[in-house]
Length: 146
Image 1: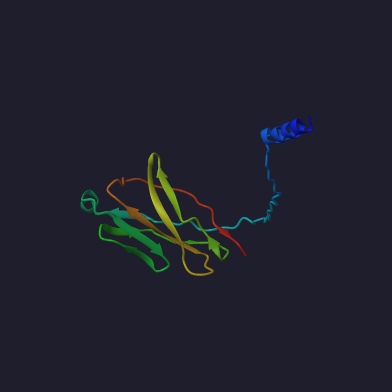
Image 2: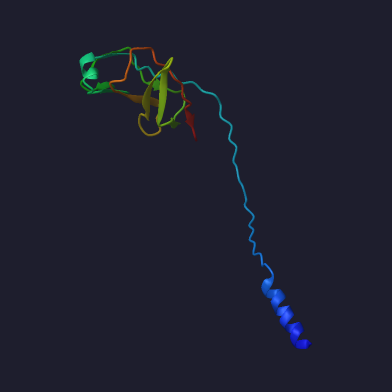
């Protein structure tokens, strides 16, 4: 009888489902910082006059606005009334790029902080054959982490 009891006990143990579990505690942290609203002037790419033949021939065009004025690739005939943005605080951080809109039409623009510890913002437009005439606008947030 003892032999059958031991055999039954071993069989029961072998047939049991053993569930292994793990757990861990995770600490979540957050630092809250308040920002004071400051001012920046508008970043004005101005009136960009493009050579239609350059655009139609899929050659594209690029214009960069910085503190020295503007530089443009072939296909940009002239730029009028452009201006970099200047903020009333330094160490500005901007998004890498933004999109400007004119109704359904849109253009991508890359943004640049002009120099280390700077308060000045410039940018670069790149046009391809899909560019259309229009008045494009957009907004972005500038922050400064002290």
